[in-house]
Length: 319
Image (cartoon, rainbow, N blue to C red; front, side, top):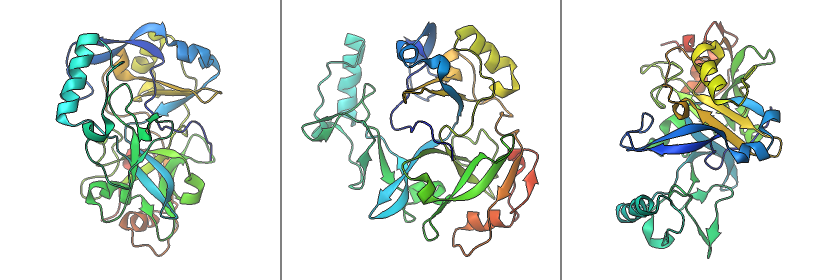
């Protein structure tokens, strides 16, 4: 499986950004918008963005595969966030200083409690043995997905720990066609992936239905953007609005030195979702062999083993 950059931290925008004091079109209750300028981010220039691999940014929730109690598990993204009092102090500091720099955190008291199984994401800065928040006031991290936790039921639906497999959506050997297949967790170890499907973020890809939900994992960096536009503000705007391949949430560039940079449609003032997306319009084949599984989604997809569908959004489970 193709392996590009792992997503452990928030990815910077490929352009320098401005903050506008108006309600966000992306996040409810956020009273500001982050808008791209036409100036390319020096981070992207230094990492040779022109030689980077462009991949589709997917609209789901971030996951990670690593060990838990000696076994490979799927982990869900869970960022530690400040409690109300600390958040109020942090926002007041940001407003006064127009920056999150120089704010003093008391990590032991300022943050909401998390499970004792929570781990910080890679490259989180530590001080005196404590993980420290980023410039947004969050501490990125992960919690293991256990079957007993109903909060992560859709995460649980795509893994079978007894067999040691996960349901993955990826390009098949024919790059033009996607496949939904069961992949050993061992092949995904230390990968980050995006969980997409019926009950995630309003289901922009039209997967499944409320009666028969469908979810799957997409390894980060696995869906290449064919003939991506140059990293130019106006050309990217035109591509997102006019090209069928531009009906995506955004682009993530994987630079040769490991640097990741992105652009989201909202950075450019463009709406998302967009109806029929590029991903949901691609053809797909189901390759999930029949085997003894207590996981109902694996069983339901195995009944479709070998079936091809003209569009991803046409994949419907049998009642």
